[in-house]
Length: 84
Length: 176
Image 1 (spheres, rainbow over the protein chains, first blue to last red):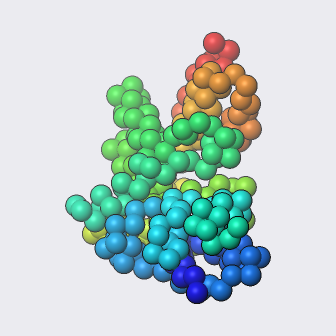
Image 2: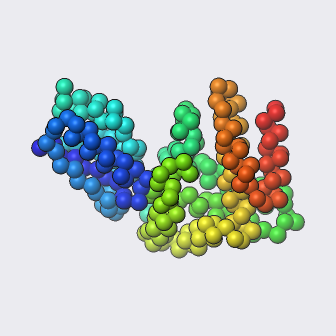
Image 3: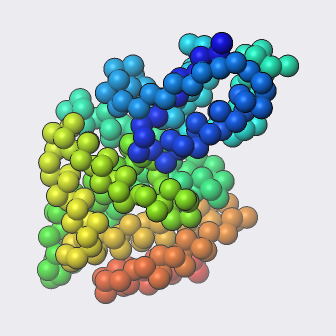
């Protein structure tokens, strides 16, 4: 099971986009995964997460500061050897 | 202070979305834009002493007007999210003002958004004027760029006589 945490407050312009893209690419690859959407600003401050959206896959920070494109998500999964 | 810096620090790294869309290399940040507006207001406070504006308030308004973007990002009129931007900004401003303990931010932000006072109207014009000037600057640095849409948008939206006079002055930079 691949654990994905998306840190992004729910007022943010990319709040829906980032989830939709991550969910779409993961589903397209037929992977087993779960996405947590973390929205608490104080929690992010505690974790020193300055820039949102901030994506963590299996405890590794893979993307921060903007919403990735689908191509970038594919590339991330390949780099992590989660797909070929 | 630490709380305030947590939000303002983000704006120092948040690029303005309009320039990102036009693929500008190293676009200005939201903080740089707010600073430039405040500097314009400061210049006016010296040169326009006969004008009946509270320039001190305008300077503070310029510094605060985009602070909500530290939470919601920079949403441009061309995006779907723009429809909900006002509502999102209100929530974000309330959160930041409470969290950073600066209630003045809410007062200044509301005045800016309502756009009824002379100070708010001039601040709105300065917002567009900075964009206008920045577009010229980018085109001078990269002559393959065409950012005229930003200037056309600014020309339509600038309302105050002082704003229009500044616009006329800036437009001379196009011919230079």
